[in-house]
Image (cartoon, rainbow, N blue to C red; front, side):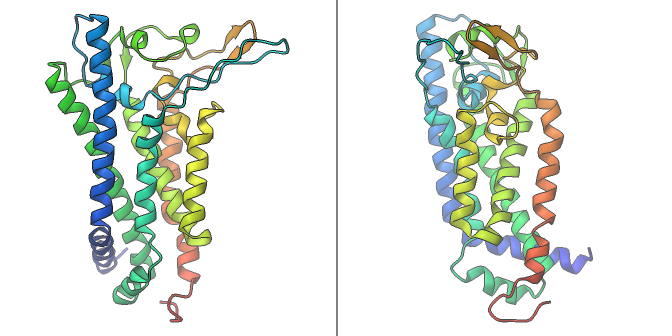
Amino acid sequence: MSGRLVWLALRTARAVLWSSRRELAAVCVGGLVISGVLCLSLALRVQMAGVATPPGMGDFWVSVMAGISQPYPHGSQPTEMRPLNIPFGWLTVVLLPCVLSVTVAREDGYLDACLVAVGSRWSFWLGHVVAMVTECLLYWGAVMACCAVATALANGGLTLQASSWLPDLLPMERATLAEAPYDMGAGVALAVVTSLAICLGQLALSQVTGVRVAFLVAVALVTGSLFVMSSVLPGNLMMAARSTVFTVAYPVEMRDGMLLPGIEAGQALLPAAASCLLFSLLPLVVVLRRDYLGGSRS
């Protein structure tokens, strides 16, 4: 790509970021508030449990991104029903970036006028991709900053190593619990890259179906992860309680069925990154053929 197209893409990204600055600020503040509440909840649990070691940054990150344990199997015999405890805090934190994708793909005519001003469909779309990636990274940076502040206030360590006592304070399945140490580095990277893939996929789908349908599809994929433990549903890739850090890497037989192995963050990271690249380039086929404002292709 020539330097001129790159410059036009950056101009488009700047215009998109400026037009959605209020929504970006609101989403980041929302993420900070929800993350702060979840971090405070962990701090209170630590205090009530009388844990001697202060929670570190890895502990606070898990408190935000734990999600829930995998669905419990149901055998052929009648068994006691286990209630589904929906992690509303985790669900809100994960779905807030999808709101950013709606603001980037706005349908009020502003972006069509931006395309006319830029004069290049390649730069127009790639500018949207740059804006989407920037907003998503700013959001997750705000969540990480909240965890860092909580760690500093608790006098904990600024590392991504989760404490061995953490599973005792969070709702994790004991039958499949892996042994310490719990290194959350790969899990943090996977959560951010998966969120990018969801937002870029939603942005790409909005070029075909519109922003509302694309948003509903993204929400369905994430919330469906609460009921099915599969790496095909991206929400599972952002649940620390379902990763191989806290869950053993082999199935565990129970009386009522089998508990599935955890999801390996390192193995899922490359497909998630490949999805980001695919969702960034594939919509160019639609953008290059779409008629904007009745104008000709450029």
